[in-house]
Every structure is written in C-alpha cells, then in structure tokens.
Image (cartoon, rainbow, N blue to C red; front, side):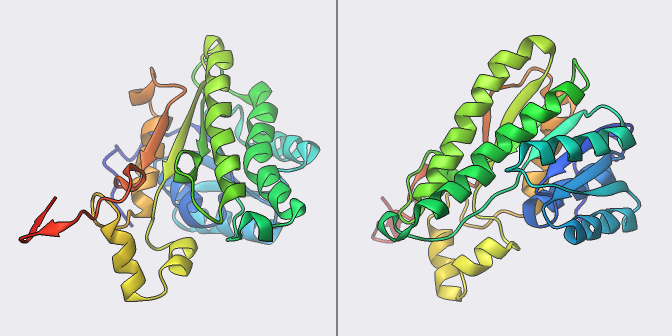
Length: 269
C-alpha cells in the first residue's frame, strides 16, 4: 500500500462515485479515496466486476458498493447514480473514467468502432456529469474527468481516442463555466504512461520497447497509479477549492514531445 502525502482522514464523511472504477488507474483512485475515509460507489458495466472491486475496497477497511451501469445509456446512468445516492447521500466527488481504446488506422476503422469510443469516453462523461448534477452537494462538489494526452497530442492509429479526449477536455471547461456559480468544480486529470497497467503492458511487451518509451518521457520513467490517485486526492480536497476548468497532465512530461535529445560528445543537445 502506497502511503499518501495527504492525511489519512482527509475524506472522512465524503461520498464518492467513480464510473469505470473496476480496474487500473481508476481503481487506484478508489483505493486512495476509501483509505482516506470516503464512502465509494464503484460503477462498471459488468456487475460482477463492480462488486468484486467493492469487495476489494471493503477488504482494505473501506465502505463501498458496486453499481452496474452502462455510461452510454443515460437512463442506466441515472438509475446507478440514484442507487448510490440513496446509500451514501449527496455526492461530494464524482469521477468519470470509463474508456475504450484499440489501435487502428482511420481507413481500417469502422464507423461503429469510432462511434463506440466516442460513446464511452465523451458521451459517457457527459452522461455521468449531467445526471449527477442534481445529486451533488452544492456548493463544494468536485467533478473529475479522466482524459489522456491524445487530447492535445495527435497520435497515429488513435483518431477515435484523440477526438474523444479532446472533446472531454473542452466539455469540462464549459461545465466549469456553467456550474461554477453553484459552487461545483470540474477538472481533468490526463494520465500519461503509467506502469503496472494493462495498457502499458500491451504497449511495452519487451525491455527494448519499454526503454524506447521511457526515453521519450522527460522524467525518464513510467508513472505509477499512486501518482494519479494523489492528484485525484488534491482535486477532491479543500486544497483545490479555487481550481476549476483545469487540465492536469500527470505524465512525467510525455506530452511535451520527444525529449530523448540528440547526443554529441556525450552531451544532449
């Protein structure tokens, strides 16, 4: 268990809803929130996985429930949020983290494949935040969307993801403007290459490919899930009370571009 820099009771009494929280980075955030005393509802399309994730949090001493919903279906989202609100009360923190991805050139991608990622990532974020608004603790609620570097850095074979994540970033800025007067903050965390995740395992199956990736990161290493969860803790806390409409890159400088440099006489130039 990674020790947080935040005090262990920081979120005591807070109610949290995390869409897409059954694995990976989002489950890491759920762990951090539960460890800090929050009551956490973990939502996913697979009811068994959602309940397994909730059991995992309860095994760590947290209070949690699993919720089954499809972020693409607004009625399903409303029902899942209502169930969690009835259990834990008005939401202090809501995270939209459901995502889909696959590698494909635009000419090798079906219209349905493109639409599916837009539906899960972009439409799903709108559905979660729009449906949650009436159930938020106002003022004081913090909404966090999980985006990615593809929102600002175009990548081949990722047309669908680039479009979806760019849409999320702009959606968050608009919601921050519209909902700020009610005391609702809306921000984005944009993780980069995070070690120990299924995605990075697929992208770096060999030591050579791992080294190649790290050479393009300013800090020369993959991040950890705890790096993202610590940023999520900040955005859930009063320390970020005057922060809204912001995009937080948690990527070690990956989106700055290729920082491997060229060498001459042993020095980078």
